[in-house]
Length: 287
Image (tube, rainbow, N blue to C red; front, side, top):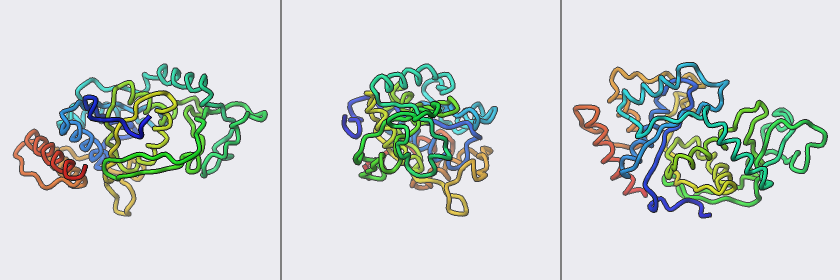
C-alpha cells in the first residue's frame, strides 16, 4: 500500500473531529477552519465527528456547544455529525480482525510498569502469568515514510519511537488510534487536515490502516496557536472558549494563524468565500 492515497482519484472528503472535553478555543478553531477551507477549496464535502470515545474526559454539554459554535461561525457540515460513542461495534470488529490476523495481543502491563518510553514488548510473547489488561498492535520494525502537504517528507520508526501501542485500553475503552482509523475509513475520508500536534499520530494510524486493509488519506498538519508561555493553546492549560459575539473576528484571527492575508468582507459569508479563494491560492503556491 502506498504511503498516501492518490487523493485525485476520489471525491474529496474532509473532516473536523473535536473531542468534547470543553468548548472550542482559538486553537481548535484554527484546525476547524483549515479543514473546512481545504474541503471547500477542493470542491469537496466536510464532515464533523464528535470524538467522545474517551468518556471520562468528556464534559457534559460540550458536544452540543461545539456544534452550536460551528454553526455560529458558518462552518456547517455536509452530513449529520457522527459520535464515536455510538461506534463500539465497529471498533470491536476491527480488533477481532487484528486478533485473527495475529496482529494484536493482550497486555498485562500497568502504565507504571511501562513508564514513559517506548513499550518494551514485555507481553509480546505471552502474559507470563499476568491477567490481560489492554490490547496492543504488533508493530513492525523499520522506518515508515510519508508525505505531509505542509511539513513535507516525514519518517518515523514506530517500533523504536513508540513500540507496540494500545488499541483497547485497560479500562475497556477504545484507544483513539483505533477509533480514528476505523471512522476515517467508514466515512470515506480522503484528506485529514488537523493541527501539527497530531502529526506524530500519523505513522501509528498508517500502520493500523495497513493492518486492517484500509486506505490512507492524504495528510496536512497546520500551525498551532500558542499560549503566552509558548506552549500549544489547549483546554488543559486553560484556553478560554471562543468569544463569538463577533464571529468574523474570531475567524480572521484563526485565518492569520493559518497564513491567510487580511480579508476585506462585509459579511460572514463574504469572509468565508474570500478565505476559500485565498486558501486555494496559497495551497496551490505551496503544494
